[in-house]
Length: 291
Length: 242
Image (cartoon, rainbow over all chains, first blue to last red; front, top):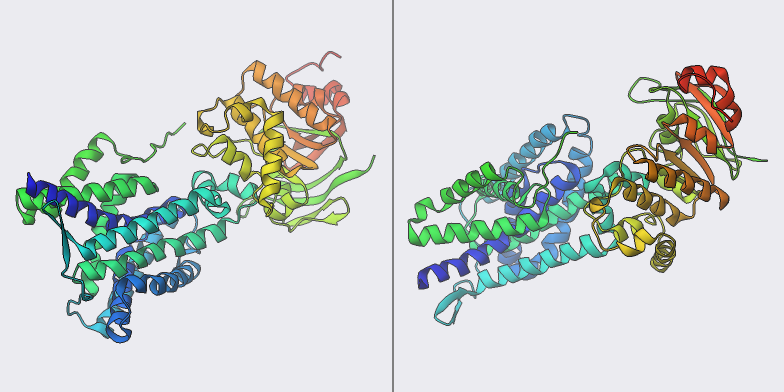
């Protein structure tokens, strides 16, 4: 039992970070119907930026969030304006898959040239420290990463629910034409939201690099997990993404300790498929009805 | 009476096709004008062009002496033109209150938005009583009422209403026509597209019959009701009894 509870603690801490990564993906899909398959590569790019700041300027990876996040927000806005905005019409969603996949490969290529393919990890002095709470080990970096993710998700949620911009975002998600008729500049909302989604990936990347070793190709594994999370949570649902991320973290951790680490990743996909058979729209997704 | 809005030779459409092929129309201030015509005549397209969803390819639209043909929806809202769309246009997962606040989206002053929302909640019992409920939980008629309440957040001078009674039961339809008349009594100009042409023309000061993207006939609402050509084409037979 002790092992299972330890696994649950670990799963929740890891799930929190995935929730941050997935929040950007699901936000962008909800608003623009764009599946940004470059989200994993953007996480890895941010991990490298944080790693470089730590290695060369000795900036703590958690402090680097304050630098990496706004920088990548600007990058996200630029990507939306240059590559994504023009993808309109009935084929827009499919084309966006190709364009953002090309972006992911481009990021991977550039990182491979600069950093080679050697695995890196950002290792602050407290990287291996942990606390013991009622006999359970809690890794300092994982707890910090979880807290940072939780704080950012709360801020994102407050932005979406308590501000004029957030109301415009939610309105655009639910009825873009009606939002336009009320004076919402849908183009502006889409651009800023894409930037916001990328900045969430950036913040998650900075903490990801402290916990997991990464190389330029690490985005393949990441994006498959992130897509599974947003599908399980319900495409476009922020709450669903958080819920599914925590579920994934806990399921994988329990399977790893109770069965075998080899089956950990696979177990989540089994749960995903089983769940989708019963509820194809995901946990918080809305089933579309054709009148 | 002075013309609040004037359309001259307006051509507009979707893609490469033209739906409106030279619309000429004048709306007098503080009146109700009802657009009638067969499906595909361009009634809804006129409203979409006036609210900025569509840009006219040719022609001019003048509001109170100011050319507004190239204005964005936000700029038109700022000039007092609001559009209550044909389709359900509430945000179903947002509360009734948040939907109302969205009506004042272009207003920057938060206290002003709150003040107007509170005033509208006083006027509409439905908004006051169900402000914290999700808009999607309301009935069709209630949703349409909230859409109108939301449109009033900007204290508009011209309200474009696209088939406001569509899908409503007879009681709700009657209430909706009363609401249109009430808005007009407050001095607002209303351009109404109504599938029930007989009922729409009955409450309208003026009517215009659209056919194939052009204005085929205009006149006082009641005289159009009595016009045998209109009756034959769009009212299903004999002129309405006075």
